[in-house]
Structure formats: C-alpha cells, structure tokens
Length: 313
Image (spheres, rainbow, N blue to C red):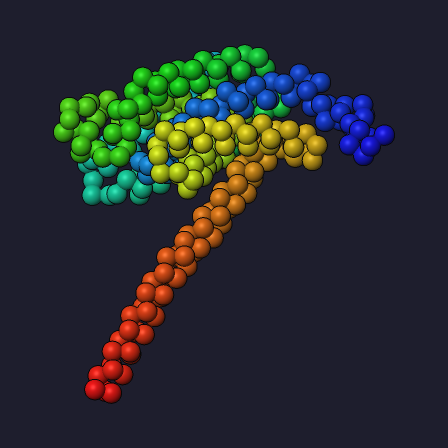
C-alpha cells in the first residue's frame, strides 16, 4: 500500500466528512452561502462609494429595534430593519440640516442607538441573548431562519441584477448619474434598504459587530486584485463564499466560534493579497527603473565620448 493510499483510509475520510453528519452544520453551511453572495455583491458598491461606516452604523443601530420587536411580539428581523432604516434616514436628515460631515453624524447616531438598545436590554427582560445579537448564533439555527435569509438574499441579488448598471454609475459619479437622468434619490435609498436587509439577514451568521467585515472585506480584496468592476463582483463572491464555508468547516475542528473564524480568514487573505500587491509593485518599479538607468548610462557615455573628441580636436 502506497503512502497516498494509506492516507485515504476510511477513518481519515470519516474525520474529514464528520461535519456533514450533523444537521446544525449543514444548516450553517447553507446559511453562510446564502449570506456570502449578497454581502459580497454589496461590498463592491460600498467600497467604491466609501460607505464603509454606513454599514457599521446601521449594524450597530438595530439593537433597540430587536428589543422593541420582542416587546411587540413581532419578528426580530422586522424591528431590526426598521431601526436600521431609522438610523440611515436620521443620518441623512441631520447631515442636510447641519454643517456636520456625514461620518460625524453617523458616529453620533449609531452610538446613541446602540447605547439605547443596551439600556433597554438591561431594563427589560427579553428572551434575546445579547451575545447572539453581537456575535451571531450560527450553530443555533432553525430552517425558518434559513428560509428568512434566503428570501432576503434573493431579493437583494434580484435588485442588484435589475439595477446594477444604474448603481455602478451612481457609486462612481453621483453628479453624472444625475445629469443623465437617473433617479439618484431612488438609487440612494434603495441601496440603503438593501444594505439594511442584508445586515438583518446576516445577524445569525456573524452578529452586528462583525457584519461590517462581510460587507467590506470581500470587496476590498477584490478591488486590490482587479481594475474591472464586473470581475471585481465575481472575485468578491468567490472570496466570500470560500472564506465563509472554510471558516465554518475549520471552526468545527478547532472548536472555535464560526463567525470570528470566517472574519479571520478574510483578514489573512487580505494581508496576503496586500503583501502580494506591494511586492509586485516594487518589482515593476525596479523593472521600469532598469531600462531608464541603462539609457542614462548610454547617454552619459556618448556625452563623455563627444567631449573627449572635442578636447582632442
């Protein structure tokens, strides 16, 4: 028996396939794939638009909405979505009526809403575990959670598919989009709605604290790898799905929480891509500098030769 054949024993394969024997792991794999696609697509638009902080603001502001939803006995997703949209609308209103910049307003609004949610949770007995909201509860899923996330994911992907070209123009050049007759207001608030919906769908996966990484890292990594937007979309989705599935799979064996493992993989990949780009750019600079130095050397040699001839004459 060869070494390769000895590795492919039943016990070895059984250990590799062990996570697939549990229902909660199959549910986790299903959900992360459903969430990885819309978050990756949105991350490309957010990176180009410079809306990283907007995603962070909305994700932090949903806590009071979850508590109010519990009090009113309505789905948590509804309360979270309303709170997220309130944060986005309040940010826009305050920005338009003050001299403050958008990032300043977002910092005030989302921190205030997050603080309000913490106070409400400390004073009101709820069945909601704070850790599950903050960091996700990927291994405590039900099929109802998966169906809910699937509906939201399909809606977000469908909207991006229908309005993708208009959104590209909007995120690249707001004024140009307005000049060619696009409804900039509609695109602005549609992007906010899809962002809020995606964050709500991602709560079970990574929670409100780490969701910003899912909404930024895939697009940021893809942006470093290509200059073409369509290719950026495909790369972001591929990166997000692979990191999410691998993170859940590894968390089973190393006994860690799935959400931080997923984000850590994305962080490692970002560092690797960034390092590769730095090395590549330095090599290109050296490659370009070498012919220039040779040309300068030849010019210097010609100048010296002509000077020596003139002296001899």
